[in-house]
Length: 414
Image (cartoon, rainbow, N blue to C red; front, side, top):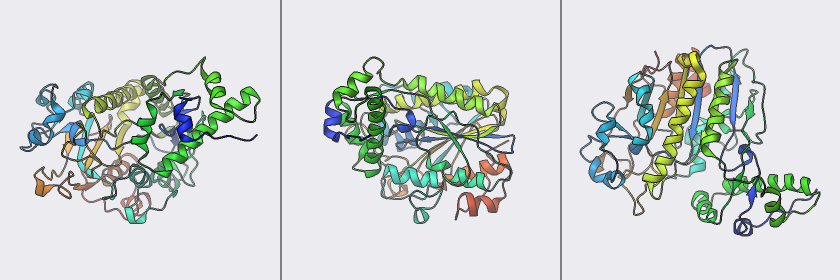
């Protein structure tokens, strides 16, 4: 069967409804599950887009913070209402997580980053985060750090797949067998999608390729339904109109949490998935609110669904880079460097913001624009895996995160 791929302009102009799984979508990635011979559990959530850590966990008592970030706080509650430790405060959209903080089941590592520097591409940054390598050691399409972890563990097996997913996350890619699953979703591209996708793509060929794949997969499904060799926009719309609707982000996130928890209550020990919406170049107060609330809901759903297994679980929510310290002209922030790691779980020694805080004075900033990273985010992940799974330090530094110096133990776990 031949496949006719519409041009990008024609595709967007006709508002095609894409009836594809999350895994086939360029906007959402599947859940990946793996079992291993441990009793503790690890959940890794990739926050795609570059979470603004200075907004999520605000250094509201830093003398420069008000002048640098005042525009983002207008109309919101006084940041001190969600005070964490007298210096940092939680974003209001994460307020539902405060009981976890008070229970010692929530922590943050601030001013952290991967070794990625200066180019500030989402796709390069995400690949380096998931590969777990230094920037100079990154090779496209190589294996990911969770897969290297599993490859070195005797008796590690893949969980049985509930697979609809058609692509895997780099973080779990490699020789070790790992299974994918993703909930069904329908994606309806409105006429406004052209502007949205223009902003997201940043002329990156990786995104364009993924978008073409999603279109092609959708056309294959519709062509099979109509028995045609060629599929045009009218076929796509007619085929999907009875069931097409915007994917419910809340429902999809809930499904992901429920499925991950169900597997983690059984043989699965590691789950990895991603969430989107953290690229806040414009109108950040609204966009980051819409991104942080689902994250809080997801973490709380994991806790609820895991039940007693929560006490053996650590959740790491990681992002490719932070954002600029100063607000731009469209009430947003641009791609930066130092960022935030969010940690949750009953195995956590929580109630702390772990940081070697660099300060926000202009001379303390990276390139006089970004939060200066003072710790490698891989080191925190490495210490968590060492505590959860008893991995030898040399295995973490040489195999899981090659070239990493773990440094001192931040004692993140109980």
